[in-house]
Image 1 (cartoon, rainbow, N blue to C red):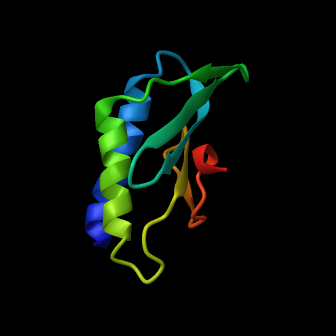
Image 2: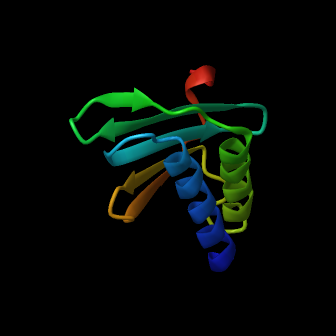
Image 3: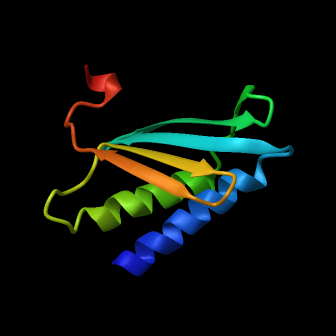
Length: 106
């Protein structure tokens, strides 16, 4: 399971980087997913500190769906929100929320 998750993180990072045409410092993707729909917010910061939006491709969306299903095997079950932060030096962070109420259900 860990190796599969690492592969998905690699795909997510590569897909984000492939969309960035300039020097950058940080990219962030927030995925909010339930069994019926998903919502994404994706952006990066340029080297000058300007925030620019990223497109959420099918591959990016599919990778988050696969990651969510993979994580469903853990004791906590499926997450509802994942924040993926990638830095230009290659370091990345993830944060998961298991709240049962995505934004569209509140």
